[in-house]
Amino acid sequence: MTITVAKMAGFCFGVKRAVNMAFDMASSKNGVYTLGPIIHNPQVVAKLKERGIEDVEEPTEDMKAIIIRTHGIPIETYEKIQAMGIEIIDATCPFVKKAQQYAKLLREEGYQVIVLGDKHHPEVKSIMSYAGADVSVVKDGETPEGLKPRVGVVVQTTQPVDALKRLLSNIVDKIKEIKVYNTICNSTALRLKETNEMSGDVDIMIIAGGKNSANTTQLANHCVSLGVCTYHIETALELQQHWFDGVAHVGITAGASTPDWIIQEIIERINHIGGKTGNGSSK
Amino acid sequence: MTITVAKMAGFCFGVKRAVNMAFDMASSKNGVYTLGPIIHNPQVVAKLKERGIEDVEEPTEDMKAIIIRTHGIPIETYEKIQAMGIEIIDATCPFVKKAQQYAKLLREEGYQVIVLGDKHHPEVKSIMSYAGADVSVVKDGETPEGLKPRVGVVVQTTQPVDALKRLLSNIVDKIKEIKVYNTICNSTALRLKETNEMSGDVDIMIIAGGKNSANTTQLANHCVSLGVCTYHIETALELQQHWFDGVAHVGITAGASTPDWIIQEIIERINHIGGKTGNGSSK
Image 1 (cartoon, helix red, strand yellow):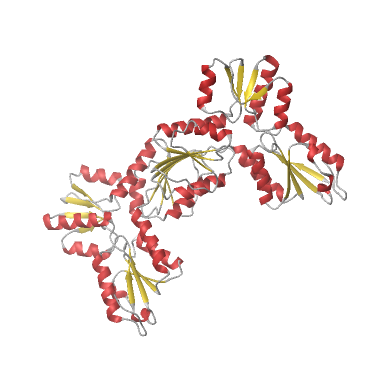
Image 2 (cartoon, chains in turn purple, cyan; image 1 turned 90 degrees about the horizontal axis):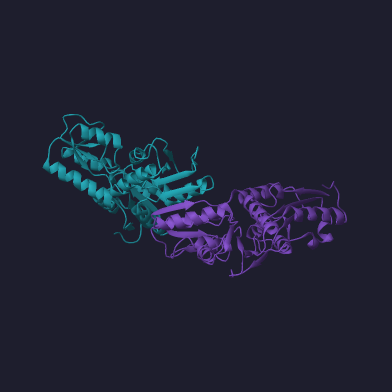
């Protein structure tokens, strides 16, 4: 059985940076917390907790420092933490930061801001807070209502570019002016592209990463849409031997918030359990 | 035989304004010329010539006044006429003027300007002159090459909105920022929409207007694409009796540069020649 691991699998630039910042803090300071999970990966969050960094819902006076997670936080929360005199370690992904700043700029330039993404996702909540009172959040395929003549668009960094194309197609005939910041992160696009290429060669595809991770779930849904037999797992423990019966070629990829050690454990366990009638060589 | 004339057939706001300005000049002044045909309708241009207003290619010192046609002229030509001391009667369509000004604004804001339209059309040539040295003109379906990260888009006023959707879809994944002025004139869109609605009810469609008129030709091509038997004519003299054999319902529409008297002559002639086995009532 051959195993091919996607080159783009796992941590992106922003996640790597945030996780490093958090583990650095763990070894240098006490009384440090993250506001919400630092990234959408329960295993990384558990490891951080072992090192003394817990995630909390709300800041409290006794905290020494708060790490802002990759997805960012609403500006009101940021200002509240500052006002409480708590040190801020800002691990917001620089690409999310850009999206926040563009939303602010569009608002200052008088545009009605539209954020393309999932309104329940913390990244989108953080961007919305910079976008003004008349912000609309639309998910893929939706057409925003009550459009003003001048519209500005920013995009959740993990959205597929086709969603942006659909949004523009839905609104451009309803407005006079539109300014778009394509804030889609390149690593998401490249990961999806690589998946397209792999999908034709493999019998099954294993997607590793948090069930609460938007980009990992998108990756899994994308594989399903390509007609490949797809399993989305968080850890190697979820692997089932019978998945590999008669399988010659396994593809593995992982979301931007999946650490390398989880991918490694998955490879090792697949090699260990194998498939009943597997053939070919293993990686 | 029933004849239905589209409500939106014929002169749009900008054309009506320009033609009125030209006929006003004809009755008040000598030595007045238009630079190129005032609109893309040979019959209107011929009528103006009878009244003493000819169209010329180039301004010359002996001219008293020059009427700028609906499509506008390049800024260099405008400045040349001014420098020659010739009076300018500016009949540029106000919507084209807006597209010119938006092209200038985008250039001043540092965008690479893309004009969606036909590079040989005088309107597009006039807009291009405001758009800076690195302007690209792309026609429907084309993807511009050598895109910079910040792109500004203006549109020839008579383009179909689907062409704009296709352009945005082709470029949005290649750039970081895009500012679009949707300068498509509403009357073009409404005329196409009305044609969609009419096409299901009629047996044949007569499109009246200049063969050199972009929006009339677009209207005719659009009808053909809807699967309707379509004839594009400039005047009633081109009508053939056999077109109406067995026809119960005739639809008539006309481009933005087609005068009412041409539409009237067409209706009269159709009523006169009729069809061999026509039935129903005539308008």
